[in-house]
Amino acid sequence: MIDMNFKVLAFSSLLITSLACSQKTDQLKTQNNVKDKSLIVKVDSTAILEAKKKAAAAEIAKLPKPYNDKENAEAKIAELVKQAKKENKNVMIQAGGNWCIWCLRFNNYVQTTPELKEVVDQNYVYYHLNYSPENKNVKVFAKYDNPGAKFGYPVFLVLDQNGKLIHTQDSSVLEDGKGYSLEKTKAFFKEWSPKS
Image 1: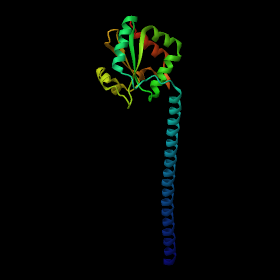
Image 2 (image 1 turned 120 degrees about the vertical axis):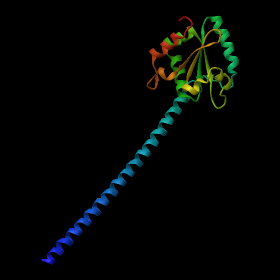
Image 3 (image 1 turned 90 degrees about the vertical axis):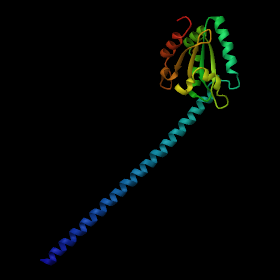
Image 4 (image 1 turned 135 degrees about the vertical axis):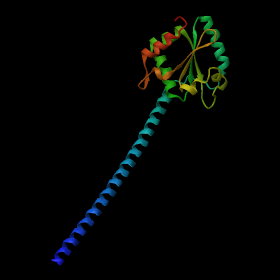
């Protein structure tokens, strides 16, 4: 009987040990699978990010570059204020740079959308105020309370015919997907026209 109990005990002990080893092996397999999957996710995320960067660079390369980092912005804005007064228009300043995909998209959108271009041409003297590593136009931006630091780029400054800042517009509220909303953009241009 003792011999039989000993065999049962030995068998039970062996069974428990093998079960514990099996669970440990399963835990290690699960941990390895999680590590493998996180590595795949990380590799996929990096590949997706690189693909997005390439697509953005290709889009930037195709779009017109309206910003001039060599221009004296202060003198140009003073000139445009005089022109606006003579033509009974306001000055629309689109601040940003040729490095900024959203800035280039907005410019292209306005230039290629006839009803927006018409509203802009009738009501504004338009200027692209450069902000880039080559020329941050620190003095000009400080004059308008550094709107890019608050809203990012592009950011819009509307000046009246006397050169007074009458509105600063965050561009993100005009966005729609990877572009801009026709209705919101048109409403923005109409709201700040000199005739409104």
